[in-house]
Image (tube, rainbow, N blue to C red; front, side):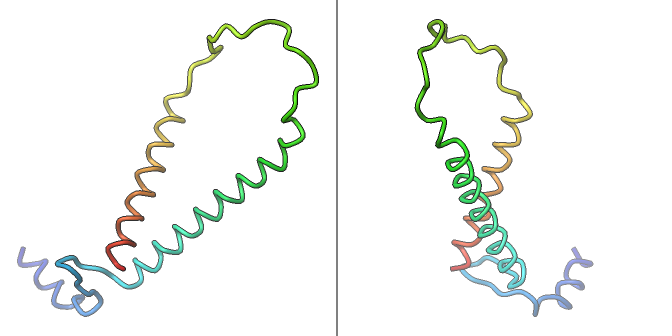
Length: 101
């Protein structure tokens, strides 16, 4: 704890407090930029997917057989884990940016 107090005295001026929480101006700025970048990437991806797959929206014939409702392969656990991790990061960034405002 003594080491922290010594170091904190040297770096304290780089931080500010709001509502009992400590913030760093540059970190907050970078988190905002990252959030904006992720939102831009997401919307760009959605626009690209719509443009690419729009021409396939209407079927050109009837299916050969009825769907049986069974998937050929299960969803990958890795894919699910990465999606959950992405959601957690997005939520964390939202909370930090909201607290700064």
